Length: 141
Image 1 (spheres, rainbow, N blue to C red):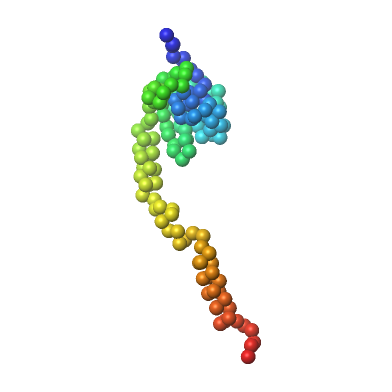
Image 2: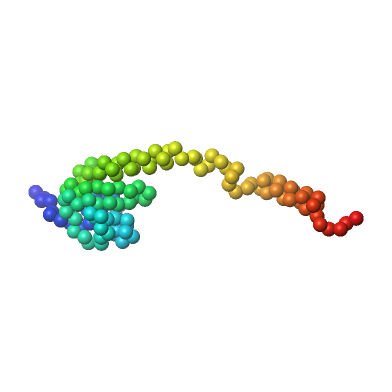
């Protein structure tokens, strides 16, 4: 029978709760200041307890979760989801950002505004050449 610990390292909990694929990734994100506990920036060795609030960033996604339980091992995803509860504000903010991303214009929709093709460059060179001949300041007679 395994007993749950009273506290554990923050980096290990983030790994067990499956927020990061490896502990070293968790340590790296903590070191960059992308993880806070109870509103304070912390180090990877910070002892975490049930009831603590953890704000973290996974790529572009920001989340705030409350620690429900601690675990000595990294289990399957359904078991990992029992270790925390995401706050309603965090869920609403993630939904708002996802909706804004869904409604944003497709970057590839306006290809004409991007880099000119070889044909476009030739057309521009031809126009520029014509313009120089017509409006030249030279004194040819």
